Length: 395
Ligand code: APR
Ligand code: PHB
Image 1 (cartoon, protein in one colour):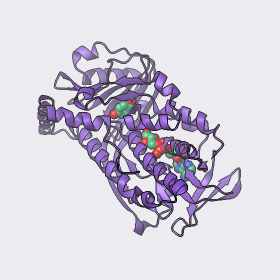
Image 2 (cartoon, rainbow, N blue to C red):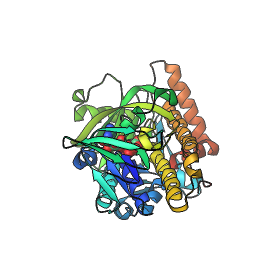
Image 3 (cartoon, rainbow, N blue to C red):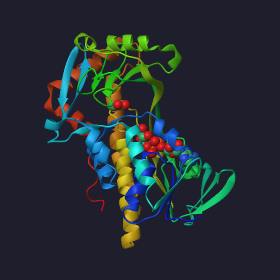
């Protein structure tokens, strides 16, 4: 079997990359370990920055997103009984974000990819093993329906998430990994109830952080900071709603509409970066190369710049015979990665409870008070929240 670009992983990074390449006539094969149903059922964050919105449009998969996505101009921070709005649109000269679930975005991408003649998707591809990418003859070995298959390709794109095979196949001496694990997780609840507020609410509270998010006017997504030893089974819906109300200012808690959960799960929080993001003819993209804590919803939006840079570089290779962009991929992608890692870490650190020492909370409240009282302070949150720009010189 043979193709131009062998893509490991059929999450948003692999799917969108394949579409961007296809529109320039470049062929790819996507090897996905799971079934389509499994991938599409995963619940992930739901905020798109302009960069990701633009990529969906460029990949010609934006019709439903443009129809159903909810555009937001601001976010709300609550702390010490206060409710403060950050007017992102005003502070950033017109930038906004869009509420559109990653679950929906993944469905839209599969609908397009499975109809695309330049793209082959192999589901339930087991034991994927990238080989010889350092020697310039990349090959992907895998097992499908019990048969061993070898896929020859010019390039490998490792879009297989944090637990994937691409990063794991790099010789240890060639890679540096930076990691921080946070001493808490997020318990998420999805429900068919109207959102408590039009915009997202990020709540700092002495009992711990809470987030009020949404998927539509009738579907809400809420999160609570919980200890790493907490189990979902111990959180009945009633317990979740009671705790959420305690962490919101009274006038907001009074408006909360509760209902049965459609899904509840706990996710750990981590910052993680791999350097470099290129190993010979293999390139890492998205969660395979970096993870950020979800405060600020940067995960997918960070994968977006990787997809943009790598697709641009591969298109330059195939259509113009230029490799200078492939050579700049890792350095250029990592610059935006570290900027988002910094913001996600910082926003996490001012909004969460790290320990029982009361001075910690007092200092957070002083910082939030300062930020809200300063246009510069609010602007720094707004600029990072709407998303830092892609490097305009990368073309
Ligand atoms: N072989 C084949 N496929 C694999 C393998 C493997 N060894 N390991 C993982 N995969 C598949 C997973 O099943 C998954 O569908 O790779 C895909 C990776 O998808 P994601 O984890 O969603 O990662 P990515 O596509 O980079 O998406 C960007 O940013 O923070 C996040 O939540 C955000 O998931 C989003 C991500
Ligand atoms: C979500 O809607 O799931 C969400 C929104 C914002 C975040 C994280 C998650 O910062």
